[in-house]
Image (cartoon, rainbow, N blue to C red):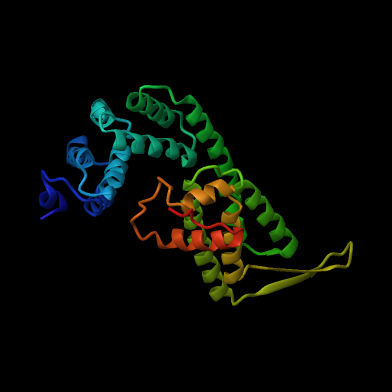
Length: 275
């Protein structure tokens, strides 16, 4: 028995909708995907729990972005559910922040946002595209960190990346930096075990200065990732601390995100606002 047979015709909890989102593939036919759209709309209309709104909206967001009309013809059903409508709109704008620039994808998102909210969201789209330009700069540079370089080169790279992070004016950046942290630390750990911390010494023939090149240690990588996230605008860090990041399921474990946020808050001296 598949998950669809198990859940058929029911309103699902957030955890069940999360499992369903992981289950389907966007390459499937519209006919095969329609039950997922149906149950997501049904579940966000009368949610069993708050997580149902988040994960149902995530499913709707993914299906509305497909370059096919089947689900977009039903966007009015979503527009009539205020909480889900607003959450899907947030997900749509956020997708622009991290997409490879694609005019066709932009056009779909723009049309969906107009249908959902009844207004052109040109400013939000422009701001998301500006964010995306900085994200592309960041993505092009951050992978270099795990390579071998001397201390001066690494310091320059770290400063450049922290400066870019200071321009990320959205809570979802904390989510993405948590993912980057896991990838960087994993790669550094793998490299350190493979090469046993080998360093290369050289001499600058012009100045006679000795230089040491090598890969960072795991502790250096962890510290750097914390400094990167701590470079986010303070108001964004505070919003995350206050549990007002709409791009994560607040009741999910989110272990890496929460650990990074804890270290960042300690570093910048912020704490969650008292209720």
